[in-house]
Every structure is written in C-alpha cells, then in structure tokens.
Amino acid sequence: MRIKTKLNLGVGLLFLMIIILSLVSAYAVFLIKQDTENILKSNYNTLEYSRNMISALDIIKLGSKETIQNFEENLEKQTHNITEPGEKQATEKLKESFALLAKNNSDETVKGQIRQDIFAIMKLNLDAIKQKSDIAKKTAETSNFSIAIVGTLCFLIAFNLLVNLPNNIANPIRELTLSIKEIANKNYSERVHFTSHSEFGDLAKSFNTMAQKLEEYHDSNVYKLLFEKKRLETLINNMNDPIIGLDNEEIVLFANDEALKIIGLKSEDIIGKTASELANTNDLIRSLILKETNGNSKKQPLKIFANAKESYFEKETINITITPTGEEKEINIGEVIILRNITLFKELDFAKTNFIATVSHELKTPIASIKLSLQLLENSKTGDMNEDQKQLIESIKEDSQRLLKITGELLNLSQLETGNIQLNIEKSNPYEIVKYAVEAVKVQADQKQIQLIIDTDKNLKNVKADAEKTGWVLINYLSNAIRYSAEKSTIFIKLKEENNQIVFQVIDTGKGIEPRYKDKVFDKYFQIPGSPKSGTGLGLAISKEFIEAQNGSVGVESNLGLGSTFWFSLKV
Image 1 (tube, rainbow, N blue to C red):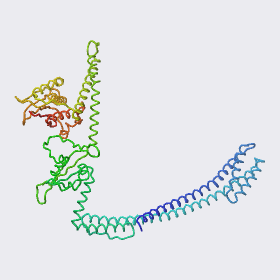
Image 2 (tube, rainbow, N blue to C red):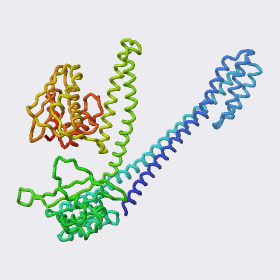
Image 3 (tube, helix red, strand yellow):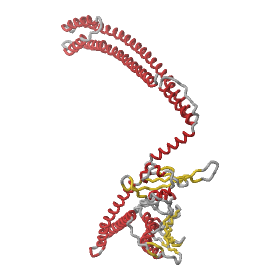
Image 4 (spheres, one colour):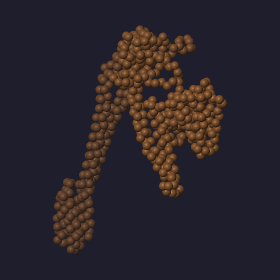
C-alpha cells in the first residue's frame, strides 16, 4: 500500500471516529435536555399553578373578585397543561368544585373538596416527575456508556496509528539515511534492502541504481577527470563576466563565451596560443596582458565596444598558486583574467557627476548674491543694527560661507571626475606653499588658541606642482587638524625631502583615528562615525585627487588617542 494511501486512510478513519464521537455525544446531550425540558414543561408548571390556586383559595373572601380571578387564571392554565394519565379527570372535578365555590365562596366544605382535588393533581405530577427523573437518569447512563464505547474505540484506533504509522514511515527513512551516509563516505557498495509497493520501495530501487552507477563511475578515473573538466567549463561559460585563463607560460587554456564575444575571435583561434602571439594581432588582448608597471598608479577601466555600445570593464587578475605534494613552497601555475562589466555603474556615475556639477554651478550665483547682500547690511550707511540683528547676520554669513565651501568642493569633485580640471604645473617653492596655507588658517587657529609650529629642512628644492591646488590641499589638512584638536594645543607643519620627493606633514594631537577607518578617510563622502558632521566628506577625497593628478601620493598615520599625521609628497 502506498504511503499516501496509508496516511489518508489513517487520518480519515481518525477523523470519522471523531465525527461519530461528536454526534453520539451531541445526541446524548439532546436526549437528556429533552427529558429535563419535559419535566419542567409538563409537571413543574402544573405544580406551580396548583400552589398558586391553594394560595388564592386560602384568602378568598366574600366579594373578593381579584382573588377569584387569580384562581380562575391558574385553573385555566392548568386546563391547557394536562400531560399525565388521570390528570384530566382530576382537573374536571376541580372545575366542578370551583363552580360550586363561585356560587357560595364561604362554603368551607367546598373549599376542602377543592383542596383535595388540587392535591390529587399535584400527586399525579409529583409521581410523574419521579418517573421521568428515573427515565432521564437511565438515558444519561446509556449515553455515558455509548460515549465510553465510542471513545475507547477512537483511542484504540488512534493508539494503533500512533504506534504503527510513524514506524512505517520513520524506519525506512532511518535506513535510507544510514545508507546515504555510507555513500557520502564513498562506500558505494551500500544498498538498501526494504522492498514494498510503497513510495519507499520505489525510492529504494532508485537509490540502489544510483549507488550502483556511482560504484561504476568511481572506478573510472577518466570519467572523473572528464566530468570535472566538463563541470568547470560549464560553470565558466555560464558566467556573465568575460574570463580568460592562462598557464604559467602565458598559453591560453580557456576563454568563456563572453570573452570570445568581446575579443571577436573563435575558440579554436585562441585556445592553445600564447598571449604574446595573440597580442600582436589583437589590441584588446594586448591591453589585457599588460602588467602594471607602477603599483601606485590608479587603475582605469577598459572601454570596450560590447553589447552594441561602448561598455566599461574593470580588469582583475587572479594568480593561481599551488603547493606540490611533499613540498612547502608555493609555485605559480597560471592566472585568470576577469573583466567585470561596470557599464551601468559608470553611466550612473556620469549622471551623478553632471548633476552635481550643474547644481553646484547654479548654487554659486545665489550664494554670492547672499554674501553681497550681507556686506551691504553690514555697511553702516544702510542703517544701524542692534546686537540681535548683528548676531543673525553673522550666523547667515557663516552658513553662506559654509555653503560656498561645499559648492566649491562639489565643483572641484565634478571637474576631477570628468577630467576637466586644469592644473598649472610649474616649479613651486614649498616654503611659499606652507606660508600661504598657514596664513589662510591663522584666524581659525587663533579662535581656539592653537599654536601652529613650522618645522622645515633647509635648502629644499622646488617641487613640480600646481601651487594653488597644493596650497588648497595643505589648507584642508590644517583645517581638519584645527577642527579635531583641543583648545590651546599645538599643530606641527613639517617639510622635508625623502627619496627625491618633498614631503608635507601636518601633525595634530587630537583623538586620532581608529585603525579600521584609516583606509577609508580618503574615500568620497566618508566621515568618521562619531565625529562632528561639519562638511561633505569630500575634502580629503579631493585632496587625494589633486595630489595624484600631480604624480604625488597621500597618506595618514594615526594612533587612537595620540593624534594623527596627514601627509602628501610631490616630486622635486
């Protein structure tokens, strides 16, 4: 029998027994309820009417119409509630006696007869109540017995299902699990031996067939090698990025479909050929196999015509090394060149740069107008101002200056990203650059009573630099140092020559930078968590671009709690 059929039968039978138990219980409750209602309706009401008539009879007086009327109402109700044998005759007799009393309500003999008639009716109903109580008790006992039988039957069926059904399902699964573990441990001779006409029987047949094939294939090393090769080829060909694999002699081992598409060659034209041979006839391969001559040079994305448009790719070269068996030294066995398609990100970057440039350019005019208006307001000829007005104007002036600085940084960034920045590279005096920068931040330093100390080597050579842009970078370094230094502290500006380069250093005694953030401080829009958000996070990024555009380099050295040293170097 199929497992699904077993489950359907077992659960269905249990469901049916629950329904039967519910119906039997409901019917038993209904019978008990019916017996109880019969007692209340047939007998209890009669006793109530009889009690009311006796009470009315005891207080009947001459001419008391209300009492006689009350007696008549209860007698009428009793007439319509005759349910027991002999009750009708007793009620008729009571009506005859009451008719006599109505003619002479002071006749005590008639009253006594009426009482006897009422007591006879009450006795009939009391006897009936006892008889019906016995019937209700018997009905309850019968109901309890029926419910107990059905409940016991349900329990036996449920217990049987609880014991047998899980074992019928769990035991084959347990045996199959153990066999799978054996297969995982490369024991391909393992077989499952349960045979039945259920799903587990089909599963056992399939498993045994699989184990037999695995055992056969495991004995064939050729199959293993071919299978692994086929799997790797399939994985590489299904990747969306162009991939080219070279061995340690730069012979092309593989190239996926995406790589062949952008190179414009067929598989047989490239596989097995040396990269240098292919580079003579294919410019793209020549650019791919070129080694980086300067480790510090900024990698530029490759512009390749692909997917019917100019696309941008980022080249990544992964060196493959192994450690031969019995040896400790790694050897290089080749490399894999991956081209990551970054066209979408490049397009978004272009759109962002153009947007920033447009917005920044449009903002400069109104900000300049605001500054001009503030200058006019500060002029005494436009009228005197009180202290509150002066404070408001000073606040507006500071905010407009900050906005002007931000728009300037954004414009510089957009010019750098689009390659439109104009550098005036010439012989520049490093002393003059330092002097210019110190003078620019002197007021800012005096406000916090910070001392700026210049420490320079003597007879330094001129540098090949744009003095204005380099001064801007040094000012940015100094402004940051002043912002994060405590009042009455000291900032050192050092100038020295190292390896045919002039090194500019700004050393502060602030709180320093955590090691995990040191590599990110020159990223765009990055601000150290917990620091005051007083800028755009572009200053250091623009500084890096300015210096690297002049073939220089930037860096930072910092220890948390001991201050930071920001530096940049330029060629003499």
